[in-house]
Amino acid sequence: MNFSRPEYGFIALIGFLGILFFVIGRISGWSTLSNFYRFPGEFTGQKWRFQSAQLRWYMGYNNCLTIGANESGLFLSAFFLLRIGHPPLFIPWGDVSVMKKKGVWGKYAELRFRQAPAIPFRMSVHLSAKIAAVAGRLWPEEPQQTPVIS
Image (cartoon, rainbow, N blue to C red; front, side, top):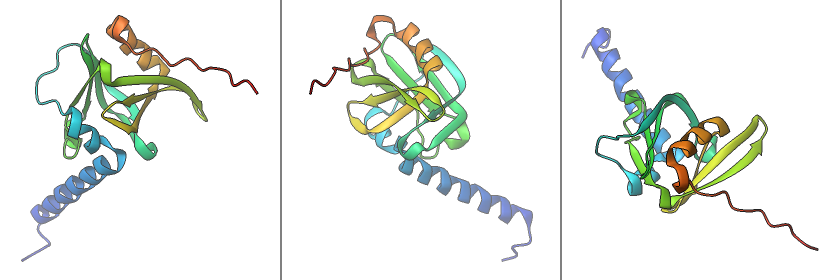
């Protein structure tokens, strides 16, 4: 086999990227979410393309997500090249909880999902406000922090 041919390099690159994207999906928790929330259909509702979020272990998905919302739930989809290990997801509002938090780089919203509570989904407060506007009254209320009396 002659490895100096460019076709072999291209095939090797495609294979490497496929394995890499699959591993990223496992590490970040996207594949765990897909066990419960895989969405094979066509999403109808408001969509925001080229969005960013973080999942487990601060795995960043920068400017490569399409995030959508409608009256039924939250839609998440990765850029088509990342689809290996990242199938589209749809999470019903009843399975979503949200908390606003403050980190090193500012405020963010952290979503958790009933079927996979160990997988955080962190996004900007600005994006979460857009999603909340579309979800309306179905957007999950942030839990009230009760003061500890000592």
